[in-house]
Image 1 (cartoon, rainbow, N blue to C red):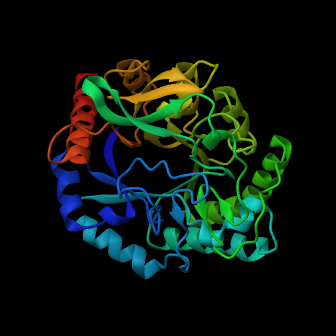
Image 2: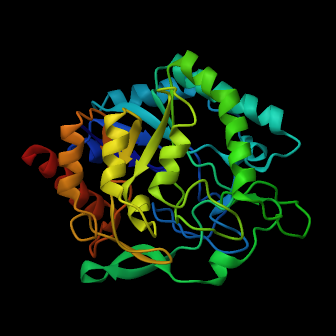
Length: 354
């Protein structure tokens, strides 16, 4: 197992590379999408956004070029870090793949080009969410141990139930000039149809490029803003991965999201995906409770037996990357750094012990 670190767009700099390496990371999962552009959230790793504006505006930009990606790899390598994955795609250049809109062909080509660019510079994994609502409806409160600031769900709310306004997808605004109105609700069957169309087009390109496509389970795993999810329980994602035999179609396995699901055995699911070598990388975070009531916790303090997870991964010879994803923020001058350092140390100790 390899210990990685997730860095958001505003953190892709030497200061944070140093911190990641000092905390024990050897690999980086990079978020190139600027989720906070013209948004109201503080620039940290736990955005909640609001009903009308979401997280922020999808910054207009071209597909990230091989030259740009290569420069990122080079800068990270100076700190003995390997760029393992890109996480999430800017809605600005693929929103109509999700929405089945008029720019579908152009946007599917954008994704193909991104995959080719990643293959060209040998970035092995693309993590993505295939969801209309995205990560929406969460609240932020001092709910973790010692009243540390963390996110979660507090039950049914307007933020979970209000329909998505036109011009927004995946909790980001892609069209600031969109007319008044809301996005029509679709069925899960329709979402799965769009997903299959997406994979039919991009999976062969990923196979040629040597890039794994790692789908993130929907967080929170429930209907959000009157739109369906790819999956609501662990078994749904087994079916989704089994749609295609390709070893390039894998899970971005988020332990916290799986634990939030109202039903299912997440340990059996971890074992299944690890045994079949269908894990892109792992978000190693803990939670307490199930949707629609759950709270994110410190990694050692939730419902998941994290030691058992590492044991399963060792038994199945998992050799991929584990990252702490996000963590409660601690009461000190560097709340994010302290929370992440605590999580990194705990994960590293578990790996060494087992």
